[in-house]
Image 1 (tube, one colour):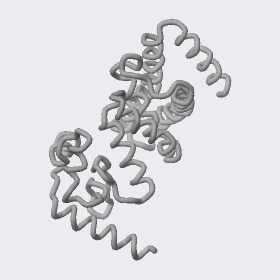
Image 2 (tube, helix red, strand yellow):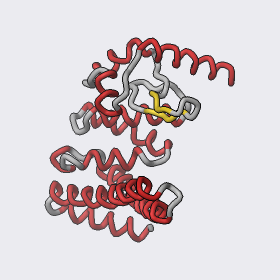
Image 3 (spheres, rainbow, N blue to C red):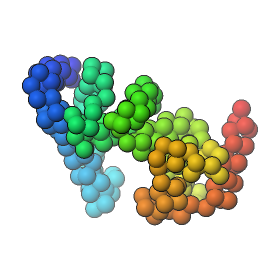
Length: 215
């Protein structure tokens, strides 16, 4: 894999010496396709044959292998040149970078979180991508999320629900402060899920009590 990454670095350096905007966009398009195509194939196989099928396992393994390489490429790009502008990355480029980081380990997400925050301030990145990372980091650490972007399947109720949120009554203020729509609108549009403030207050209180009991 190190030879693949080395070749990528040499190619990237050459690209920046040529037409950076077109070439980095092309590189990110390649990462997008090798990341997303096996995901689509895997999900289609799961719907048709189930998650124990050979077809599902084949595409999941292909995705895993591709992701290892893609993550190294994205990290190398960010470490070497910082967060690319929208003009250089293209409309889908930032989504590509964020998706790869979102599927990385939590330590990787935390490492690049300050860079993402600065990219939002510099208008290089939409706030919605930063929110995904912030909430994913929190949920992976077993903490309350801030913006309500992470859902979880709860086996006891056999249904999806929002991972408990910090101070649910003021979530829309936090979301508005970085230019996001109200949580009820987002959840209905994204997950067809109905936000109920009183329910979420109770779930947050229960979560906090459970954390206290653990400690």
